[in-house]
Amino acid sequence: MNYDIKDINLAPEGKKRIEWADNDMPVLKLVREKFEKEKPLAGKKMSACLHMTAETANLARALKAGGADLVCCASNPLSTQDDVTASLVKDYGIPVFAIKGEDTETYYKHLQAAINHHPVVTMDDGADLVSIIHTDYPDVQKHILGSMEETTTGVIRLRAMERDGALKFPVIAVNDAMTKNLFDNRYGTGQSTVDGIIRATDILLAGKKIVTAGYGWCGRGFATRCKGMGADVIVTEVDPVRALEAAMDGFRVMKMEEAAPIGDLFCTLTGDINVIRAEHFAKMKDGAIVANSGHFNVELDIPGLKSISTEVREQVRNFVDQYVLKNGNRVNLLADGRLINLAAAEGHPASVMDMSFATQALATEFVIKQAGVLKAKVYNVPEEIEDWVARFKLKAMNINIDELTEEQKEYLSSWEMGTE
Image (cartoon, rainbow, N blue to C red; front, side, top):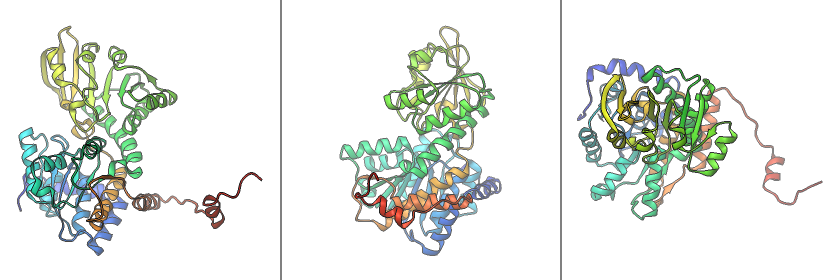
């Protein structure tokens, strides 16, 4: 088996981590058992470009149980858990190409390895794999039945490809599923971003002015958790509806140029480019901390920060580089601007990834069953998959809900009944 990981001897610790996560992923376990019996992915070559964490390992186990011939690679140079990749290779027989801290050249070499597998189904966190296949590998592209995309950033890229007529095969926007977006993005990103920032800095959030760039599901999750820990949270936005929502949720809303001089901690969660730019860095107070929890580090204008700095003090603390500005103020950049929740922490808790990865696995089954029917478009996750995942998650949490009576179903489907 061909693979490229840090150290196969890390496998015992990785297996413990995978099994620990599995304990909190009951819905994905049900999917794995279902796949084991039905083999819906039998013989299908798959390449998955994902954050290589313990939770992802359990998704990989489910796909293999379904019969997939699977290869995995990292979707970000800093998000890999090296002990987990070792266990996937040694204990579960799944080839992995991922090393935490890999340079850009190695990152793309690993993507190349995933493409060389000649997949007919792909999975992406950020659409790098799909983008490269479209750009450079027409012979691989024409055999692909479909793909799944799990990030806001990736869905943005893929919808742009669809609008431009560049998308050549169907993609399921797993990120936009309610069982992913409402929970993984809000609760998962919210908690894990706070976790990553605290691990990297040991900062006390209470009493700090924390600037949240973006008030989508990820931003509101982060802002809410910081507020709950006693922070004074400021939100910056470009969308008037989201800005209004943030204001009505009790947050201060202002432009980044207004927030820059007063913030203690800044975190971008937008999916866009250059959200914090050189002119913003230049206004920051001495000791300001800057992090990103979007998929790509382009949310922060790091070249712009370098251009206004006289010195860069690398690794003043694990995951912290200190930029000394021309005015003498120091700006502390976390994890080179890469997504802080995976670079400095362990990513989302297994319980919330349980829903996302169950949805991901079932969407894979759907793509294979609908091969030749789906067009080269970005599709939402089918409602029946959303319903299945939500119902089994409730069951796992020992929560029961009501069902509509026949009278109520009839009322909701009729128009004759009105004011009495």
